[in-house]
Image (tube, rainbow over all chains, first blue to last red; front, top):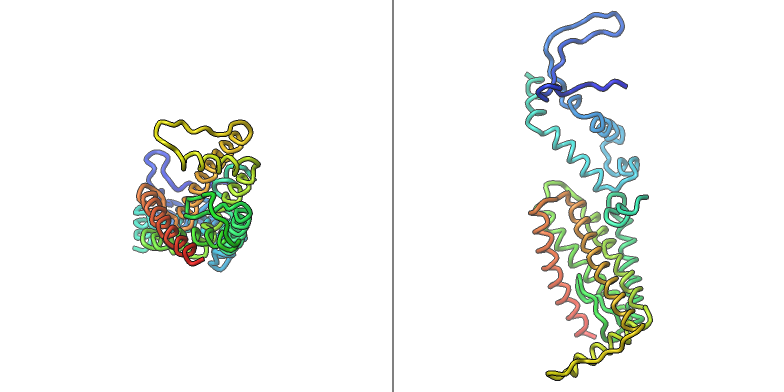
Length: 98
Length: 203
């Protein structure tokens, strides 16, 4: 599976989307679009958020699913929250809303 | 399961009510084994050979040790932690962190340990200036020193587990968290000593 690159390999700044294409008819849209905050997270974080939403936001259910303790899931969620609150992610989210 | 995470990071997988049940079971077992030989866990980090008492006194000592540290760290965690942690996780994992006391109690069952302890206390009690105490050597001495090493190792291990419990459940780390934990340990030690003294006086 190809991974969506989120950081510039040269300066490590968050990458923007320049071109979008319709997989059906091939129509292309070009512009500069910031990545949504969730898309800017790493693949593991994204998978965690998907599982979390599927578990109706229940940390208890997540703990059972991942076969770890409740505080382990809580700490993992805190890490993701920390990354979403990081200045870079917040500025990207701000640009996206503007 | 790998050995190192099992020994030092069990709370990655076990917390909450399960850890509370297992931990209280371990405290009870350690107390009952201790009652057979007059082994008192008379402080958060203390273990001493002492007077004979009803079995429930030994179990109560372990429970007092646990609750003192758990409550102090719960308060400290609420102050310094930036996350909404559950009290049951900290209470449960702190109880489970005391499971090395079972190994300490078992180690003290070693033949010769209590004989050598009694001889040591007797020789030190009646010690006169300039007189070198004579102690039995051989198997009893070997048993005593081996058990002492096991006790020290288990105590260090127990403190490591207590720290892991606090750090993991409250999601705190770094110098500030370590300092708060050490102060909490000292405060809980004092509280437990006071409560256990009151318990023993009431017998």
